Picture 1 (cartoon, rainbow, N blue to C red):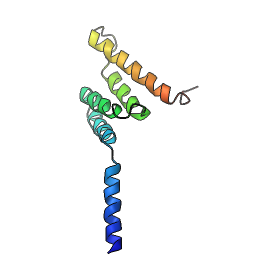
Picture 2 (cartoon, rainbow, N blue to C red):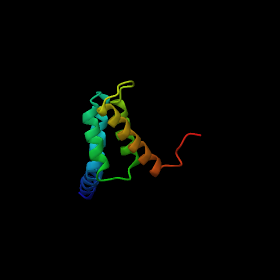
Picture 3 (tube, rainbow, N blue to C red):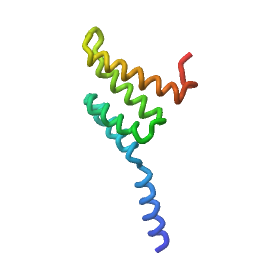
Picture 4 (cartoon, rainbow, N blue to C red):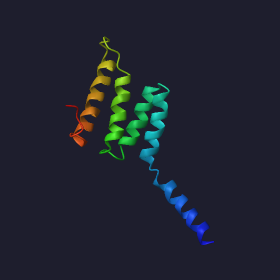
Length: 102
């Protein structure tokens, strides 16, 4: 009987370990892979909000912004994608500055 309780408690703890931020990140990855970049941006932003120092979430967010950028198009929206991506890439470097290429 104790083994069953231990297994049940272990399963419950493992389920609770999946934070809402991690859920948003995983869902964002799924929609990013489906090339739904605006939706991915929203989900990655939701992952960043509760954990602003999570470099992984910022990196995914920056990549989703850059995926919406169209080279050679001079529209305000296109420029905003680049500025948003730059902001997020700089956030990643702020958290992991030692992780730069030589």
